[in-house]
Image (cartoon, rainbow, N blue to C red; front, side, top):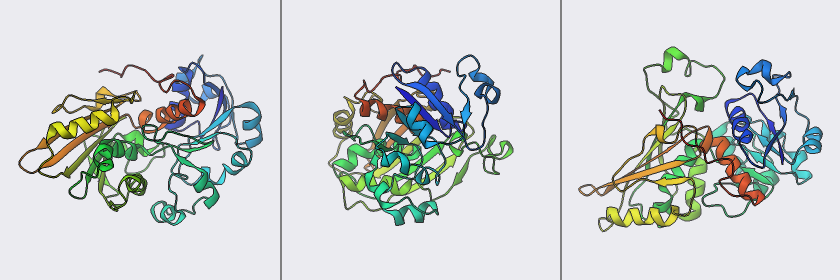
Length: 340
């Protein structure tokens, strides 16, 4: 099953190539970029003898003629203007940007400061969080990296309405999450031996987290959310702090996480009281989760770690495609983490 990639030259596009190369059914189809059109080996020497396709300009007709589906690994604000020809032909689309995640156009415009996609596209798109989405149409919106970690960290509590206060999320990300475009924020001298909080209360993944939570608890209308860059290439450590009712014990909470995640192949729940580290998931599609309850304050701390380019982007997209296509959910995604 050939898969085209639009936005091949970005970090997420390159990660899609790496993972598709390992997949038993998916095959790398046509590669597309607005900025580069030449043999891929000349652009990325690490792909020599592995990927030999040319890089083409965007062409919907070529994509539909030569492939069975298309991944959009483009920055926000691009795919919303490019997907219509595919939707009109009911051609399968997996969008990894934020353009189709939010159901209300005004919310997208507020948080992304860009013109939203047409309502018909927003309503047709499935917010494809694979652990909680059972059916997929041909237009799929892959969750954001921070959103993935935050939702998975809190879901068992939110679904049971066990929060006794506003959840506080503290997300820390490796620099690849900022993308390839150079800025002062991502400059080596800014991030090396440093940690920097950014977009406090303004990160564009906040509304999609709240949107998902409200499906489980309509009264949960806000979260406290901070994001920071740390001097590593990959990985997100999402820490959730939230009070629970005094009668909730650590064992009760842990059991709820077991119930929700014991059948999920990419969620690895740590033993009660043990917290995960970033290196446990680097290069993989796993989300490792650990929790601790403070009996004095009745605040539960939950830590979820993911690789932002895999479970936070390309790997989750392939996991969704596996489910959409009726394949084994783990197909091509059972890599051992990079260690050390």
